[in-house]
Length: 319
Image (cartoon, rainbow, N blue to C red; front, side, top):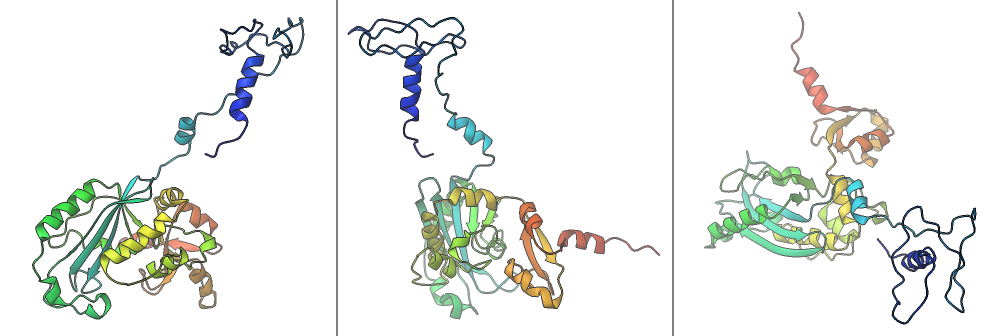
């Protein structure tokens, strides 16, 4: 909260006005305690002698000291709070799903939100025999099999998880599926997707569901490389360092969300695209997006919740 000039000085002066009559002396420089509730304040003291005239019966009460609000109580009334420590995470893989390939690199940065500071960062490779995605992530299989302290890296990664409250990833649905597979541990922490869950400020002129490259450029972060796990984590670090409203963005990103399908004609499909819905992902043949209740109420077109549709579709049909 920014300081408000004059409030503190005004509070002290008004306390002096209500302190009751007394004589000024070299020993009594303390203005004394504020008057008790219900006491009769005095009028303005005489500037020559320091004496205060006795209030007349029936005279209107003088000004009372200002009671400033408690910052602690304001914080309690503000609702959910932002996490203090987040684990920014990214993966590189040989395919789009664990059924087709494996994870071959993990990057992780433990980030302190209040100070916008990196506490610790880590990157390690997982060995593979082939990498069909080498043209994208630039990881030759032979490099992944070079000697490295993998066991120690996994221990440190577990320690990072214990020190974090939330995992943040860009396209979290993709990264999340690789954990609990092979030697990678399960991640029981809440996840925030910086692509879908965080609603970036409109003045950044970002499209819905921006790429990490577009997000970095929108915040003035140079893009020097792509598709290495720790590099993509560092882009998010530099974006978060520049976010004055990061706490508010993280709180809003944790609101419960459900998957909805747009009910629009082919001619109206542009409305879904402009609202951040994606075609064929994750709902085949539909424009869909995860929405909070507030976002749902703000939509200008009709949607249907996908989970409810699936529930109805699996009900036994009557004869």
